[in-house]
Length: 263
Image (cartoon, rainbow, N blue to C red):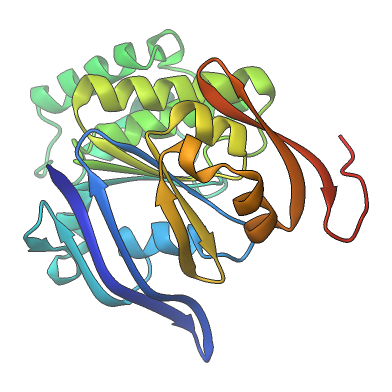
């Protein structure tokens, strides 16, 4: 089943074209990662799908409903967005932060079903132990889990994540990625992630989209896409690609200008 269909999508900042004539299909219960160098259009595409930006073209949900004809509140019933930065999150308890995700479904008052949904999601993401702590007091990994919980409380069909592992240490990167993949498979939603780390993308994604200069270079599973040739073409880096735990593992060696890549 197709969850999202994107047709002839383009977006520009003034005269500067960021995305050009992009076509993409996101399947049901799929983890799809957008990879590419800085400026390739990953974050812009995420924001276009969520209607933060208003592109040209068509974005269809479940093959029929045009997301660009819906209001922001209606979009929030279908799309859950987890931003890259937590800077815009207001100071509130973890419980209240997650409860904000119920806004598209709530009336004038918070209903029992809203409270029940928050409690259910907190248990699912293992954040109930700090429900009454202030969001600002949490670690980076805990904050990411809370923001994912807030998005899930919208009961979305698609979860959008913009660099969910940025500024996290290795343990918290794995924790967040394990959480996302597990949720997709348990709840039958789909996830689209913009992500820099090719090895995390390879390990946790069903499919990858390689972007360069606002266009799709290639789409496919990690094994078919993460080749020395593609990495050289997209990132300008010579690399060794190995098989590890039944997934490709990328070891960058040097940039194309001859400098060895430093760890």
